[in-house]
Length: 520
Image (tube, rainbow, N blue to C red; front, side, top):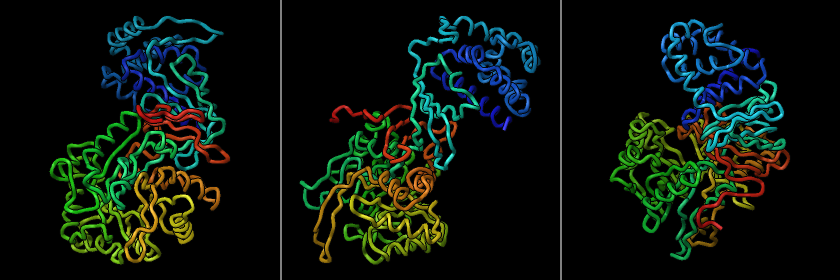
């Protein structure tokens, strides 16, 4: 436990130094003041960790003393009132490179801001410094249950996770920081929605049935901090250019937004002339979708068409460092997942099953659900469309799968938000029509916990760690040191949404929600 605490403390300070140095503020002075007014046991923990890490920072700084990381650590220790650079464990480093150490320390001395003593504590004044956020008195879900923790957000990332015993947060006094008491709330990763119609959808009943586009407050009301935009049936009045621009707009407003290239029809629409170019040249494009199969609105692509598309997505993923997935809309035709199995069979297994992600699995009846179970047991991933108010299709499937031992780590949920929800009768006529809400993923999580007695961590994975893993989003879907600062805070008893943070910024509180320029 002592080693763990020492290592956590060391990581905390080093990360603070790196993040704040990136914003051109004086990192050595910050470490100095933490050391001067901080608890001395914490200081010794840092030094113990460095002593024990013979292959870590100490060894590195003996060989590469001029690196920025070593200069910051050397100067911080040298400037500290309780330890001189030329004494103790760091004497070898500073004896060998005294000129560097002293020179860097002089720079820090010259840059120190005016100090004021307030009630015996030091207050560091950094005019214009970006404000960090410290969430206190919360229970952390990673999405696995971790326990009582404080979470420090600095810049766009998680800078520290710690208990009061490991590092009393009073030791951070004086830093440019907002302390937010979440009052026992449950701190969890921000939700990831991999299927959402950001520019609106629909149109199946004519132009007047086109659904409205997404707004920032609506996305935040669902706890969504990351999303993947899709087109759908309408590939004409809803364009990829419009979707890309909408994605950029929501990114400017603070969310993390990606998009699928294409729509229902094949050949697949692209922005640059090919899916491969889209994926390599446009950061927002992570794959192709939603391509319709087994649906009367699809173009009924051949196996060779699908094989070519999936292969191109796979190569595009390799070259761009993305997942390279093709996201398939599965309709109610009884061919169901057959087109995808044919791709695997024709390629003789060369195409991994995980390169294809079918959705709307719970929306077409028991036969498709049974086919999806085989797909999952063969190593594939599937996406369920979360239930709108008064519906229970996905809820029921999830309960059955959990009871039956189906691997839930291979299942995600998405909202289909802002898309149309047409209901067709046996003759193909629309008998009902509605718009999907982006709040349904959070509603599904709450329902699984409150009504079905699932653990919160089992329910959270469906919209956090699972989709992040499917899409190779390594800094999303979890709350760890260095992860993106995307998180939500839920009420401990009701699971109602209290706070949303996206890329380290406050987006929603119990009394306020951030709005776009024209949102009401």
